[in-house]
Image (tube, rainbow, N blue to C red; front, side, top):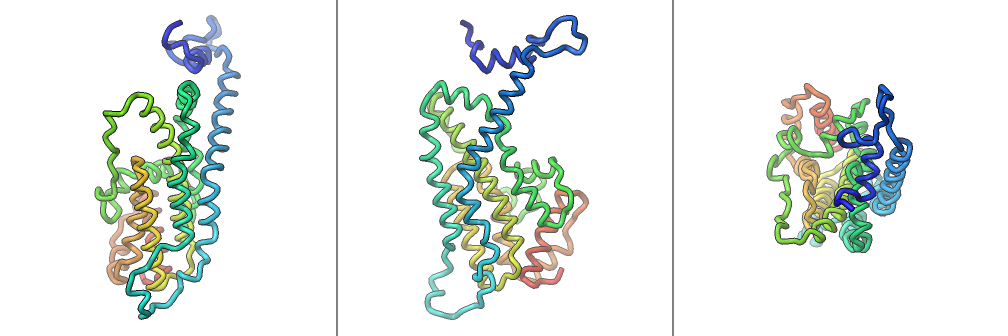
Length: 296
C-alpha cells in the first residue's frame, strides 16, 4: 500500500481532488465520484468542530455573559489603604483564565492516539470558522451594520493593518516558540492542541471585546479594574504560548482605557476611517470614549 493511500487521501481523490482523479470521463462538467460522500464527511467534520468548540468555550462564555453589568465599572475612586496595593483582576476574568489554562490538560488525551490524531488533523483547516460569531457581534457593537467576512478574517488574523493601527504595534506580536528539537509526533500533538487553544482564545477575545463595549459607564476606578482584567488575560495567553495570542486589540484597549481624556479625544479626531476595518476600530474607540464621558 502506498504512503498516500490513507483514508483521507483516498477520499480526496475519489471526491475529485488532485490531478482530476475521481472524475468520470465523458461527463462534460466532470461529475465527481462519491461527491455526496465527501460532502457528508465535510459536514460531519463541521458538526464535530462546533461540538468541541461549544464544550471548550461554554465556560468562559458563561463568565463573560453578564460582565458588562457589573457594578465595579462605575465604582468611585478611593483613597483606602487597600487600594495602595493596586487593583487585582476580578473573579469573572480569573475564572476565564483558569479554564483556558486547564484546556491544555483536557485536550492532550484526545491527541494520544497517533492514528486518530492524524485523521483529526486532516480536517482542522477550517476550524477557525466556529469562532467567528463573537467577532461579528463585536463589529456590530462598534456601530458597523455589515460584518463582511473579509473584515472578520482581518480582525481574527490580527496582522497588517491592525498592527499598524493599535497602540504598541509590533510589540503586541507574540512569536512562535522554536520547536525544532521536538519529534514529529510531539509536533502533531502540539498542532492539534494549539489549534483548539487558538480557536477558543479567539472566541474569548472577541466576546470579551464585545462585552467591554457594552459597559454603560467607566469611571476612573472602573478603568483600573478593566486594565487589570485585560492584563491578567494577556498574561494567561502568553503563558499558553499559542502563536498570535494575546490578540493585539486586548493590549490596545488596555492602553486606551488608561489614556488621558484629552489624548484620547485628540486621537479619535485625527484617526482615518477610509475603509471598513478602520471604521470598525474608530467605532470601538469612540464607544470607549463615550463610556469614559470623553468628547470626540
